[in-house]
Image 1 (cartoon, rainbow, N blue to C red):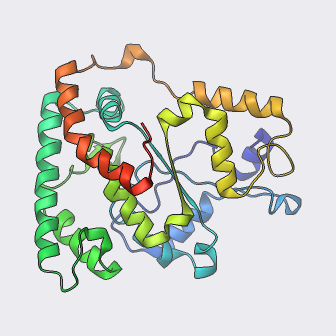
Image 2 (image 1 turned 30 degrees about the vertical axis):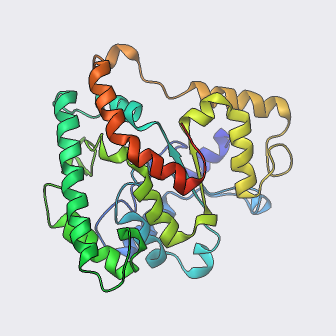
Length: 291
């Protein structure tokens, strides 16, 4: 989007949305926040521009996907599409912990211990809920919407040993900012979104896929949205397309001098082994290996 459009809307292009990652059920406020973050476009560009919103914790926050149908009417929901960008979970956890933005004072060994124990506690609670369910199910995400919310309330919000606790950053409450380990278990996150919003409405790719072939990955994303790579609904020409994609690929890395020292290979290997069965479930769910 060009600078003129950003000035018209007053919405920075890289603003992170914090609308649905909440336990609140104030849906009128959510809708108001959505419109405050929506870009204004000219009548001549309607149908040629995608309205995109991004929130890194939307996929992880257990309540987020349940809010959408309460905020938007059916005809809007039917047009929505969801894109999930994931990363090899051990490297994601390490990067999250090393980042100065996390302000996590624990050692990585403690992060690993806490994260694994919280996950074990959560799964034990899930298993107990499933055993009491009147309808047989292998996963919580297979239950009805009402039952899923009941389990989330029981196993997340009524307990303090199953997930990262809220941390205060920059004067506002930020959920799960220290869930370095659990956020990398993508399979149940995606099951939840698939169950609620449809497999055909979601597109999943990894940072590793983008790094290996950004043009090809973007092409798949464009096809998913039904837009052109180059053309009326795409980039002006191939040169602009390639330049933009290359620049986007090079952005986003933090200054190495601000990062903590990387954890030992031994401790990272322990985390990789912990993630292995979850990754295998993810490959089976998606039908391909992403990293």
